[in-house]
Image 1 (cartoon, rainbow, N blue to C red):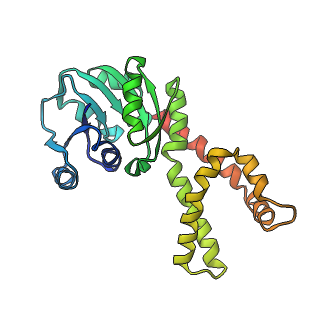
Image 2: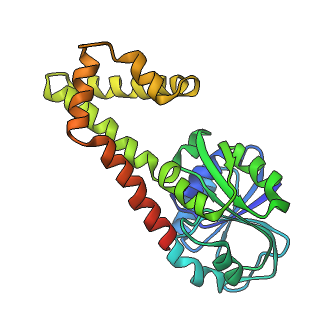
Length: 250
């Protein structure tokens, strides 16, 4: 399938990294320096976005900032075959008012797409569900959701989640350094922890995994009590709520 990316920012680059081996890719954007960088790194066609770019019959992946939708849409003409939008909080109705397409799908990937590890959520027209999932599976795994409300919630988890987990990683490393471990060693330790955690989570419910690690009166129990005292669990729950409120408000 030929994919036409509209936009050349960080998310576009991450998805291109995961898709260009299996799909014919072209990138259309206003930033010439970004286009030049992409063409030198990947085997993709690049086009500077100017007035009246014809999208007729194309499969678009829209990767611009939500605030740029109106300006970008004014430069497009024709009716696309499909529009896959990564714009957080931008409803399908808004997309329909801006860009003509036969099919509309909202997706929420994350930057792990560049390593083929994005957890991507999707919703939209069932008529393009199979194709959209196939595209998203090329840069990780995907989950089709039943409503736009659900994808806004998922945005708070899968989309914003890497930033939240980065905070956890940094804090764990800082704690180890505070107690005397060298920073480089602390960072290596945390990276190894995160790498090993994914398969554990795949095969265990989080609560059961916690119980398996936490022995009575042990080191984990002491540390866990400190996290509860600091209301870390409450903080993460509130972070998801705040991120969801912002996502649905766009």
